[in-house]
Length: 442
Ligand code: P5A
Image (cartoon, rainbow, N blue to C red; front, side, top):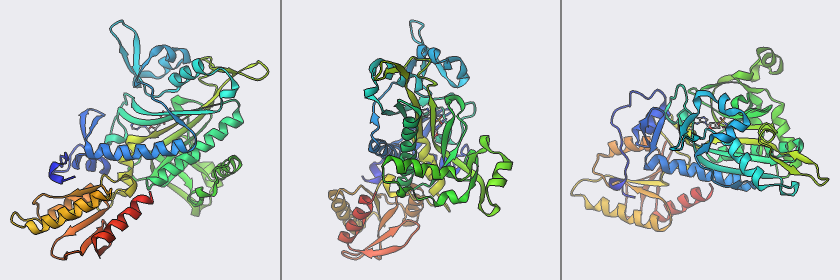
């Protein structure tokens, strides 16, 4: 893609309404545009990054055997009345009537709808276990939407739902998802800590929030630092080891503020290991047994003819919030570096171009065509901005690698710079091999 053709409305000034760096950067680099309070349009660069995050989330769900479907954004109020949550959910729920006066709502979550789908399709214990998920927009009429995509009204969520026959099996599903989440965040270049959490309006008695550390996070956290040392690769994808490894996490105190008890923290965690800080909740998982299956009468027949309500859990990842969360974690000293796995482009060619200087343009175009033909997603800054202005711009756009075409480049010798890192002088073939290696390792 040529930069002159890219729809990327960059802002010159810092947007005054943005209080945290991710919100500022997303507005400044034309990733999003507010459409009304807490509701955003996703412009090409922002959308591309979010789609890459979505792909990784999807791959990790599919790896554990979860199956993707798609439920609508608009739901009937009936099923929410059956579960009892229609009244409980309060003003956060956007309620709508159609022309016949039927009560509808814009789904804030999908426990009811998936239970309704399951109860009408599955009758026998033989069909269990199952994990179903979708990636869909949600709407919550948040009292105080803020920080851009971090807490907004309309947001993109991956929500999965597990169905099992008994508590033990259901907890295995929970543990599988627990590690799928850790793997997902790792691929996004994030260290997320699972923290014991309150269940709030979703319900149940077992729940973990996945938190990444950031000063601008809304969650206050209290943890035993040693939780960072657990190696998730220990688990070999077989159930006993997943359950055992999950138990390791229970050995270390790690809670968000609603579960915090000072006496527990000080008595269970040695002073040197105490970590009190803030973080961003990027995922949240719940086990709630028959909280929804019972009122919605979602049961299956057992071998002996008895009926049992299915045991359910639900598992959410804030896909759109993650775009902001990655920025909070990676944007330092006014320089953004996207992890290669989700960067909007693999590499950018930055030539010094003056109107009459066709040489650098031709060189750049050659490299561009060569890399493009090698399936590398390359951006070419074909504008006539001064080099220093170009560098400033790309410090914010955050493409991890740059090929600089200026006084130091020879016939087949180019400056290849890692943003925030070192510069090598490489041939175009070497650049291609290096980039391919990076891309394939994700
Ligand atoms: C789990 C899946 C649920 O909704 N039901 C289905 C459960 N959990 S949750 O914690 O309420 O949300 C899951 C994740 O969605 C993101 N999120 C938000 N992102 C942006 N703006 C919001 N207003 C918002 N609310 C929730 C978070 O990442 C959360 O962990």
